[in-house]
Every structure is written in structure tokens, then in C-alpha cells.
Length: 141
Image 1 (cartoon, one colour):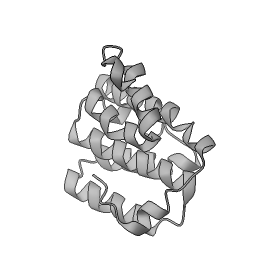
Image 2 (tube, rainbow, N blue to C red):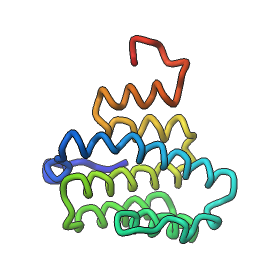
Image 3 (tube, rainbow, N blue to C red):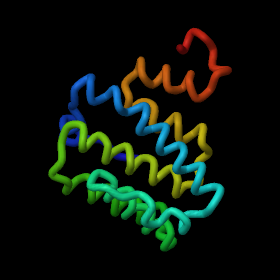
């Protein structure tokens, strides 16, 4: 779990238009976790690429090397703390870190969803939960 402080929180600020892309990102990470469960972590090393996914590839490699959850969390926390990114790019990095820690902990798809959905904001989080879990009570949609 990311330990938040005022400085990190301030760096997350982004536009509503940028936040609109987050449910798609979360859904992609849920699919990634499903592929990991089906084929193992080594099957994905190198599959995720792109500038904003560097931390994802880095984290997957550390998980495949067997780093303990505590060590992984420390390394990723340092990565975030020393990052020069802000706004949407930093928010995406935080979501990747949260997903990596959840994957390393062996969390279920449902728990991963519950950890990542709040990054989308309250309304979008409920819509995402409803889309992923059709049996969710209507008052939450």
C-alpha cells in the first residue's frame, strides 16, 4: 500500500478529462493480473512496454525475481518519491505501483479492483465496480 503524504497527494492533481481514461487503465491492469494468474509472471516480462509503463515492467521483473513484498514496496516507494512526474503521469505511476503490490501479494481480481477503483474518483469508481460486478447493489451505481 502506498503511504500517502501531502507532497505525494498534491502531485496527483489532474483534469477530469485525464481522469476519464483511468477506468480503461484499471480494466487493463485487471486483465494483466488475469493473464499473470493464467500464465505466470515470467510469461509477461517484456510484454508491457512504453514510457509510462517502465515502472510496470520494472516491478514485474522484481516480482519474477522473487523480491519479498516488503522489499518491493520499499523500492517502489523510493521510485515514486524520487519521480519528477506530476499530474496524470504521476497518478498513472501510482496506480501501477498499487497494482504491482497487489499482484505480488497474490490478491484476487476483486480485491485488486477495489484497490484501484478509488483512483478514478468516487463516481467513476462506483461505475467501474458496477461494470465489473453486475450483481453490485443498484444504490452503488
